[in-house]
Length: 380
Image 1: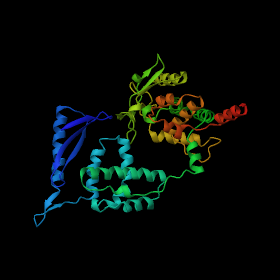
Image 2: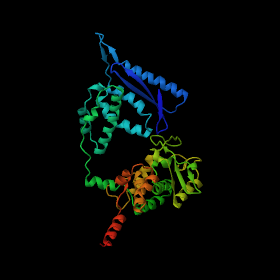
Image 3: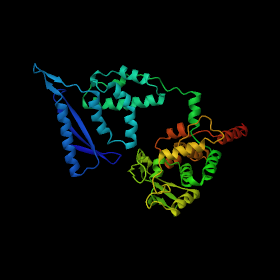
Image 4: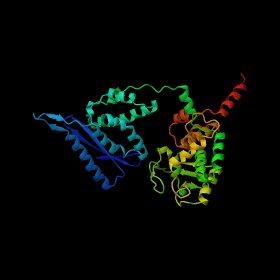
């Protein structure tokens, strides 16, 4: 048995065994939170159970010939789910499980070897889903069937035979993506309206802080006073908060979204002012951004009030207003200010510049004006 450390900080243990029926070496794995002696013992037990389970699928029939027990989709899904849940964050677990609801409704009682690519393709095409959601579901199902192949329940992955329409970019879809940000003028409108309502002063400071830093909402809610360096105007992102169904004073700190999400960023004077406002009216000795009663802000509450304010914007069009829009807006602001892409990536915790270029680099009205001015002044 051997193990390796994952990016999440957990440890994956491996064990090889010889499959007499397949006449080849195979491997089983299990993921645990540590590499302690107790974890080694637990891993060995669980790995042996997996090997025994695989070997027990080969049963003797009446003619003493080896036959293979066939499992249902639900049985394999439950096994995969227990492993998968240790690899991803609780928020991702919830999203992924939702993606399997209709899948299991259709296939849970069927033998896994009977599932064909056309069956899944028909399910995805008949379900009323957006193109991007359909593609995401295909990714989820592919992970499941890849596991079934790896462990040996099926020989071929039926997802290899699933064909879906390409995600065609239309003018409306491009405009929708470009509308996922607020310019400085719109943000001033929002803050003016929101600060005008004294009841939601702390909530409004959350919106302004998100706009000025580009933090994810989970990262902001996880901030503790020990993460703030007032002397050097720095903020360290070390955690994200599980905001799926956990509210009030119950807090579950998780590792940030990716390894690149661990970062220390500079904050401007206005951010420092906001932090000092929360410090002066201290409601929690550990966590920074809490409500008037010292509880973690509810995501639903923050989103609901934000959307209500945004409905007063002059140019609201058909935009869908979300808190993540404030992160988009911060990155668009940095692009407008001419900040290098690599610097933006480090500030917001991205590892792939394509994400910045394709999703966040919106051409604002000011950038377009600057471009025309430069072209008009260009002389050969």
